Amino acid sequence: MPTFEPSRSAGTAPRPFVHGLWAAIRFLFSPNAGPHQIGESDRFHHAASWFVPIGLMIGLLWAGGFRLAWRLYGETAGLRILPALTVVLIECLLTGGLLCLGLARTAHALGGAGSAENRLDARLYLGPAAMLILCLAVLSQWVLIASIPSVSPWWPQKPDWRSYLNFAYPAPVYRPLVLAPVWGRWGILLAASIGRTAHHADPPTVALCAAMRPTRVLKWAIVPTAFSAIYFARQGNVLIGVVMAMIVFAVTYIAAVVMARGIGGQTRSTLFAAGQIAQLVFLAVYRAFWPLIHG
Image 1: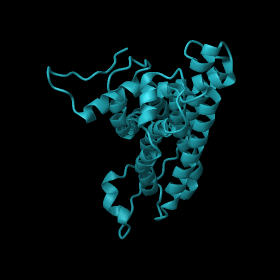
Image 2 (image 1 turned 90 degrees about the vertical axis):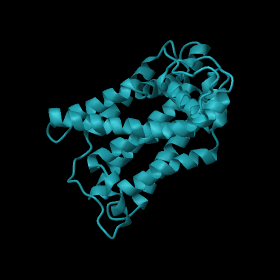
Image 3 (image 1 turned 135 degrees about the vertical axis):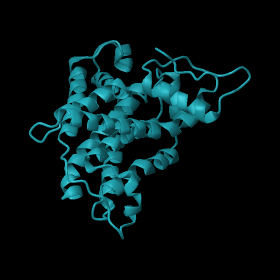
């Protein structure tokens, strides 16, 4: 697998934000840990700042793929089955495949099946329960996306202060698609700040966990929370989006604590599992809150 190392000219050191970008891409897109490098901790101090922006880029790809497939294939009985499948395929081809596998591997390790090494790493073998969770994670994501109702496009009207942000408002059906990957990648940062790393964790995971602090996690939580409050408060009730954010935070935090304690520390699989949980919880909470958001 490629290590996604940036090219550099002789005698010229890449800037820190470039180091951080490539470290984040390597962590999120490559299943291989890669060798430990000098300055790895410093790289991941800057890499943490790229997780949420990368999630936003993936969310825009979700929305774009959904829109294109919707125009090509339409919908069936009010459900956008093929557009939702397109989103799932985009996600599995990008970092989402690693997130789902992380959830399955963590479930395998928590189940205590196989040898001690497999219980800790769970890379070589997945038991039936883990395979079931993997399938359910993909299926749940597809169902939650396909069941997003389509409503008439609406935008805040003056004197609502949000009317000045109408240029950043996609149609309602696309708003959860943009934000779900953002919450998912933020969930990785949240898990990285909880507890210690496992003794068998790969060096990039150790470096990312060492770089994370609760203040950094809360700082980056402002981005998806603010967008949730703006996008999902049709009547100016910003508490709807804030409550949604609090639910995602609480469930992801509890899951990350349980996984870390059950395995003996955070691994790359537990970080990815936390991201997958945050992403699914957000989609589920949005679907449950849909009557409050859109009437």
